[in-house]
Image 1 (cartoon, rainbow, N blue to C red):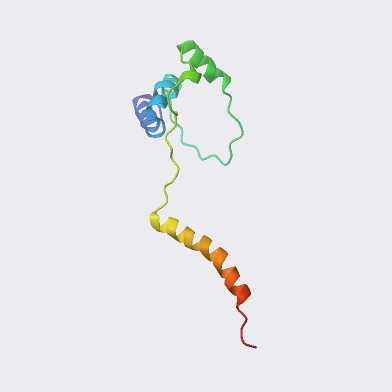
Image 2: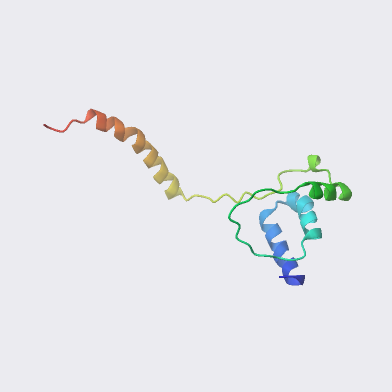
Length: 108
């Protein structure tokens, strides 16, 4: 995908994953360099070459060490209360049940 459709989709993604500080720094870089959108499904990530990106920030006068806040939005999945309670019960059972089993002797 290219042109205005790609630009709109890329902007939408940036707004979803970058904080205000991230949009003011990395967002500017991405907007200046993204001209297409490609959907891929990677199986593993090996490396990322950051030198050209850091050079662009230097050219734009953006000091990365002096940025405010974090750049990326926390996209960690939120667990439901029921899921958290279920995990707490399982952890408690892992502690209590072995102790109960060691004390329990069936009638012989």
